[in-house]
Image (tube, rainbow, N blue to C red; front, side):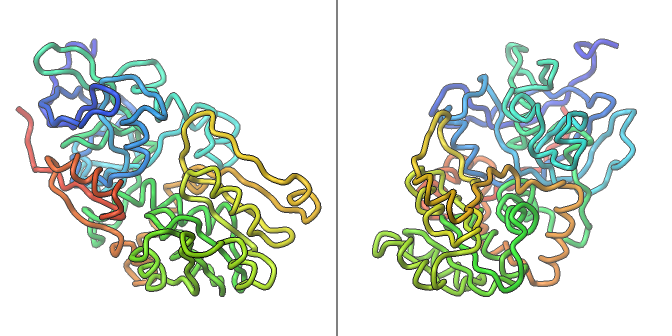
Length: 381
């Protein structure tokens, strides 16, 4: 049967129609899931820095498009080939990967060869979308990170939904699919921070603070957070940082070298600023490793002293989504949260769905570290 003839569900979605514009909540038609897909009733969706980066087209995507990529909800329907989840399951939606390329096959799906078209291409790999306008029936790009979860229902793939325990607070869990996963996974999986080591997070937003919490879980004994916002630095201390540095008040490289008696074993650049990346590299000890997770405008370059990297054997590592296999990693974060060892709820503030632009503005102004949109409960028309 042609998908053009499949009965569509009427949903609400926050649509971006022009670069830099506010998102508008619209009535949208959503098609049924294809054989390997899952339809999720979205309970809540985190708001991530990448949503704003794409809104402003620093990462270009086709428009109009439905954003949102930290969705959590309840499986509503599954395609005929889906075997790992069923209707009624609680799931977190995460990034999409192909599952067939060499990075995917060797355990690095976050570095999938098709990462950009699958997550920023505005549709499936074949170019098709699941959403269209109610009025004109014109396609609306979706499948942003394989989900487009700024919507009351979303079509995801079996590959990028992660079943989670029903005793966990579902409306809180969406950020585990991107921002929180990125910070924690970078520490625990990509960098492999060891017990007794020193770690620095440059940027104390959601990613950086998740990294601080994960460094504490890993047993790092010197955990430093660098930021320019005093309230975020105070929260970093509460979440496990042993030291904080306000980089407006003092030179972070000099202070880190002083605290660590020569440099940090690990640093993570979370701000997306080239000059901060240089600091994260310069602050390393001999054989130290700097991970890069901050999203920057395409084409951004940074300069560093080659000899100061080569001679002490420093390493610079690009990291996407913590380089984790989400189906294995997200349930571990849920367990750590339920045990009180990973209190990421302290970063979060809830907003209603129609406050999406307010939530984005509060995030950009530093008022809220991790906004989460609550979705209204709707049924099919």
